Image 1 (cartoon, rainbow, N blue to C red):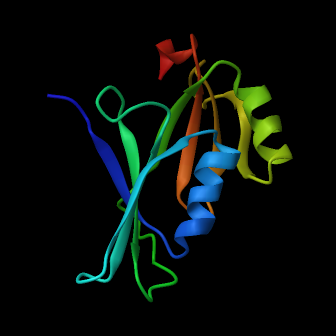
Image 2: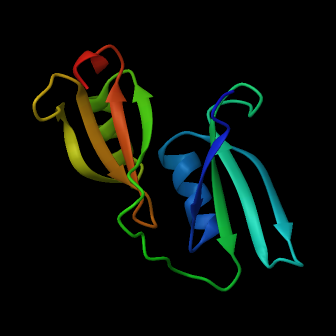
Image 3: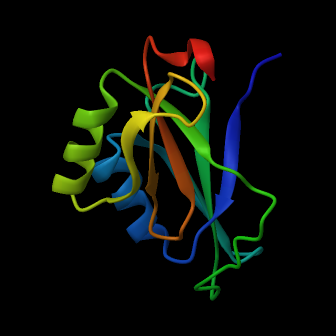
Length: 132
């Protein structure tokens, strides 16, 4: 078994695709409209779905916003340098909500960014995960 994808509902699909591709550097892997169901699915990731877990962006036509609730936590991405990743994300118009640094009560270097719908994305610096 392996993780295939994480699905999140988005209010503006084009805006979300732009964030995940332009700001986080993912690729749009596929996109399909389902007119009978009035929704569109787009899959983004860092590599082919046959080898990598990806993010499924679900846009339900006519729904511009969702309540995030408190059950979903975040998507985590491994990065070489969390400090540089935060600087790069800001340069590309992304929102950093927690600057890079060691996590509380540990030594793992993390940061958090937020996508256009408010979903949190944790950046974990490679090689520092021992304490998390």
